[in-house]
Length: 595
Ligand SMILES: Nc1ncnc2c1ncn2[C@@H]1O[C@H](COP(=O)(O)OP(=O)(O)OP(=O)(O)O)[C@@H](O)[C@H]1O
Ligand SMILES: [Mg+2]
Image (cartoon, rainbow, N blue to C red; front, side, top):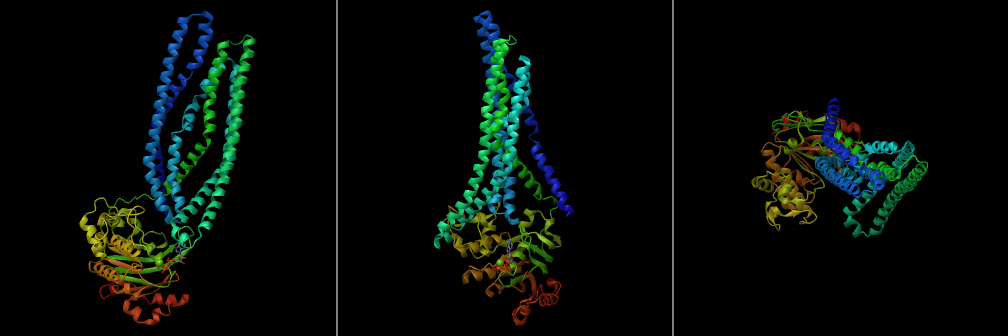
């Protein structure tokens, strides 16, 4: 707990560090913006000079000299502007390159904790949103905003009344912007939720295309999507309406303000308090002063979205567990100890498996049996660390799983889940778990151990056959056997197979049993879940899991021959308790070799 807390703090520091690397670049951008904004006064000064100097003196050379100077200054302004936008694009790309992989890591982790994949993918999109905003006019408006006082001061110097009018206008416009934010915040947050639930429906429909087609409920699937989409559109209309209404108001107000400034200028000129050039100069400078507010209002949606994304990203990044452990533990060779393991469902937190204790030594092979929904899959998900434990511990050679670095631990575990899925890539890549340094020998050895080598070489491109949407489609049994090879790759110490024979033919089962014997012979530990006894030929120990508990555990002879222990299985809590207390304490010592 304490440890966890420390880790979280450490990684949130890392987040600020990551974002802080942009600080010096931001300072440079602000400097560039100051140059651009000072140069932006060119137009106003030019007007002043023309009206007050060139026109009154009637001197063409003065006009030409002023114009040449103005063109030069404009060119500089343009250059700096281009430079600024190029820097922003690069900052956006760098930000993306740095954070997208981390956000993707969060996307991979989230489904384990009960989030939908659509929601997880949204985290990846957060990075996109921020990058898009960084390169939009909104960011430029933010960079220009601090220079507003410069233009206000310029207008004020022309005439204090003009200055006050511009300031008042700016104030009203800022109030409008804030009102937009306050009014649209709730709606846009709801919209985001609606977007995720719409994507969930779309995602699940696309994944279940076969079922939908075969049983002909395409229309119903579409209308379910339609409903979700309607909710999403509804909320989108609402947020856009709010932004649009305030945007329209502020536009009209801007035009009115511009005219009011000209009118006031004219009035002051009539009164003899202002020159004609000053009217134009005031118009140019005041529009420059108000431009960032205009742009901010226009880009408010993007800004609000980017801010929300940044907040979420910071949140998610700070919850990622960094692998802090720097000690590389030696490869486990002796034991697997499951001590009072209680596994909870990610998301709902319901206890699926409680208080399972089991001790296995090198060379042990245990078969887990029990009724559907008994908790076999949940238990092994806890054992291999996919699901977190509420209580208890899983230890490899006495070291708890959390002491291992994920990458390092993964090498010692082979896991074949119940619903085998292969990742888009070649057969070889799938077997080697995308190890870039995989040797062909290891891949072939794993395939041979799973008895799938001949099957693979018969595929169109052998080991290089591409799998996935655009690759070769494999049968369920073929997938299962390649999944088995993936679990056996580089002979991991712990091999966990969840119903590895559910799609296998006789030949596949023979290969599976042979593979299990090999694991035992080389001193590995294997856990096999099976409904069909044929997969239990090679195991020496049997555990019965039902009602979320390990209700019986012993050698195969003890459990299977003594029919009373298994059928009927103890139905009551008391029976289960008795069954467990009857279990030998340390399996390894008593049965490790005899099994
Ligand atoms: N992600 C989940 N969230 C909440 N409950 C779950 C989740 N996965 C499984 N369960 C529940 O946990 C219980 C045990 O499921 P589990 O998959 O472990 O059973 P099993 O013994 O492997 O069954 P089977 O032999 O059918 O594969 C079930 O009642 C199931 O409803
Ligand atoms: Mg299962």
